[in-house]
Image 1 (cartoon, rainbow, N blue to C red):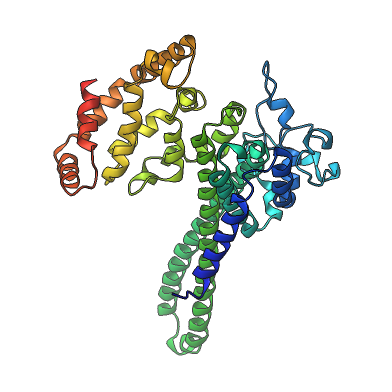
Image 2 (image 1 turned 180 degrees about the vertical axis):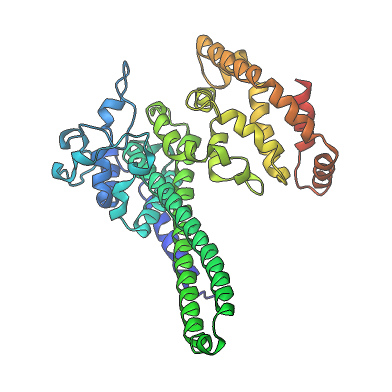
Length: 404
């Protein structure tokens, strides 16, 4: 069957990209960095401004990763064969990583198409090479987190603009009503001559606002796509569980740009399907060494995760995912973890203390939410889904958790 059009072109590009990346399985680390460095040329300013990898690798006192590291230099960041012109750095524009709205400023000069293309390339690279892609994770993180910060800022700005448009629309409607009342008090013969012009003006204004709203919605759609792709890339990195790569220096930045701005809406954003952000949080239950990532950087993360269980109209598939996360913690056994995850006895025990403390701090919330999960409406929908093969072990999850 011959396929024409945009879908066919996309499939062709994806296939060619997969063939090229599969052929790179046997390349050396230096060759891989050179290859990826070509794609990173567009983002050289972002990489130059980020914390150099050498400072992150210090075992005794690693530097936390920052997108706006103060003091980056060409000598410490020129690792990807990108242009190391230090003049690209504008020290007057250095901003704190806590100000995520400014962290991705360099992306203003990069097209959204270039960002999307790189993110697709990074996902394909991880899928094809697996842990062999680890040597380029540092530079990838600089670009990916900058993309998330840029996308979040674009979404915030677009939402503000939409709110302003809505306010103006309300004001216009109010003004129209006031003008109409005033016209009733005036001489009808004088007013009649202006009706035609006023109607034309109202139509022009309405069309202009509709066009502006469409442009804003388009920008939001592109920003959401970039944010979703970027978070999926990060999740794939964690899923790999690379043995020779530490995510710890990057965690504060991940929270600042990807999690903290959305933590209050975590429940409302995951009622119908599991978002990319929720799947990222779930990836931190894959191995005990990730467990601290759920509790050490924002105390709201775990309770907000639990609140998804009682979100209005939440789907059974999402409930099952959250219950699976909770069950992972309840089932944690330090003695089993020593062998299953190749941990030292001390590390396994420390993770057990962390999990126990996390559960105990939120035990009231867990029991309250589990009671809601077992309410008639939720239980009936879960049972129906189970009988139809939809939610699988959702009810068993609930019973198992309560038995613990």
